[in-house]
Length: 237
Image (cartoon, rainbow, N blue to C red; front, side, top):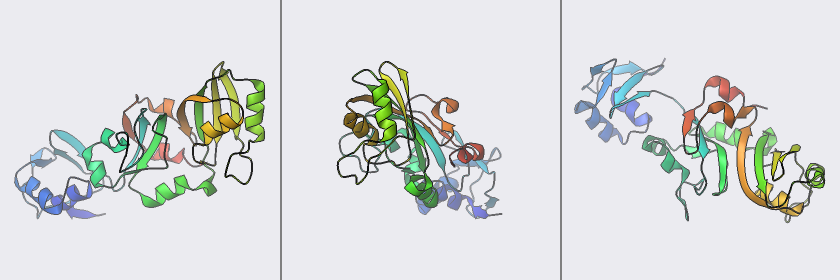
């Protein structure tokens, strides 16, 4: 069990510098178990610890694992250039904790985006060696045909790729809607594959990673939620 002073706990959770967190405690801004704590010398067990600060209840988390239902026109970058960054959709504390996107979605792509401050987790989920399947639904400019589905399953040649890339699974959902499952995670892969197969991507949404589906999380665009251990387990192929 880990025991820390309250100012160290606040700092670890992204509330600011050690000095700022110490001032928060001494100014009576933090309460634990319904009682205001003003002494930075008091220590608390971190496991399961809940505290109240800035009119909000918080739970201590050694690492943060969340999923964001990303809206369009947000960049998956800590230093966005043309659009707001996805971190602006999260509590400010997550930026202090160095929470980062797991991989990237284009600014105009919506849907499931994992985010965490756990480096090994980010690396594992991003590594092509893990073969984590990712499910996309693409709205197409031209009608979805059987030939299009067949080409995507057989593999299409993309510029700068040594070998054709194929979808793990692909199916027509509607006249202008196709579902594509990929494992590679190449740059603009869905859009480039559709173009190489003779169609065009008008809109794109990621709907699942591994066995975790966006629909099961029940979060609207722009909203986020913490992932439970059971949900994290669904990300493993």
